[in-house]
Image (cartoon, rainbow, N blue to C red; front, side):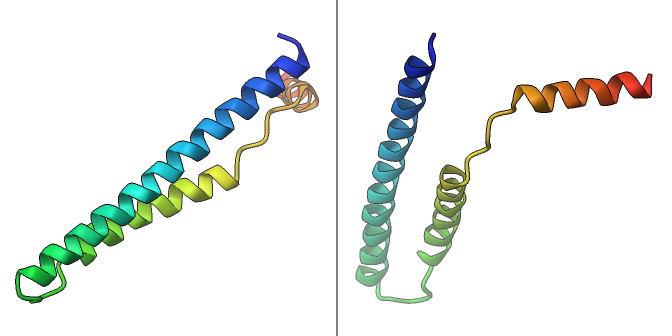
Length: 90
């Protein structure tokens, strides 16, 4: 696989992750609103929907963070430096 094909594959994978994340956000909002409507229709006691909304929201925040802060690839220079370090310890 040449550099252009690899770049295309990486871009396609990134776009698929973004679309999946957008789907999850839409589902999150829909489910959260449904839970709030159920709470409201049930008499509005303790606001119990906060627990699934907060838990799922935290998971989405972590996922969004990991998508926007991707790990950079390991370079050949880093590999060579690590190999030299290991050789010098032996």
